[in-house]
Image (cartoon, rainbow, N blue to C red; front, side, top):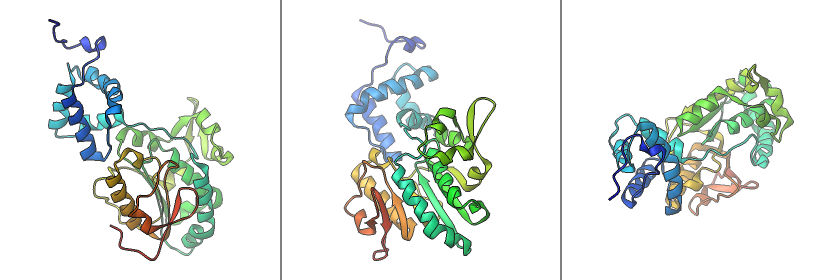
Length: 291
């Protein structure tokens, strides 16, 4: 009979993930974040969480599961989220949304701000920050003194690690150069270590916060525009519908809502929005009872 692995042996042996442990870990992730892990994701879970087992010197997934279930500070659960979520993003991803947003700034938001009105934008699921910095660049390219008005961009994500990276505003030079907007380079500065750093003008516009979209939202709104792109694809349909309706309730009548190119509004959520381009929507004024 083969002996059980001892501490330290995980560096050379891949731990076995039992059905019970997989279902328990998937259940924890789903109940706390809304992210649903299908059976097809099991190899990914083994590959990514095995690194956490080695870091913690744990023998098997049963021990890891018990740690996540019983910890009181949520520290390892935060590592688990970082390990199991994929933060694929880039500057000006799905550029048609930023073209739409640029028109919104020029036609509506800049005049409103200059009249003394509060302007609020939300990047929900901001990952490592490329989206909110693209939003801020779009604002400043048409409204250079926006930071002198009550004009703010909120950027949130559940993963504390990516929020910290976003807040630092540091990116490889090539990532900035490859952006689809030439304007981006005017708002980043080359640091001594070769990375590009977001200018103080960009950073003044953006506030970064850690936020689980399933939790109560501390901000009151209303928002003039919300981007939540390539986020709800990780949720089941019921969770998607709840979130879309909550977003509707946080938007001003006429506010814009942007989702990812592979995402679609659920049936109930469609009652709150009118199409305003490719996966972009306008909050209608006929139904205001969003949850």
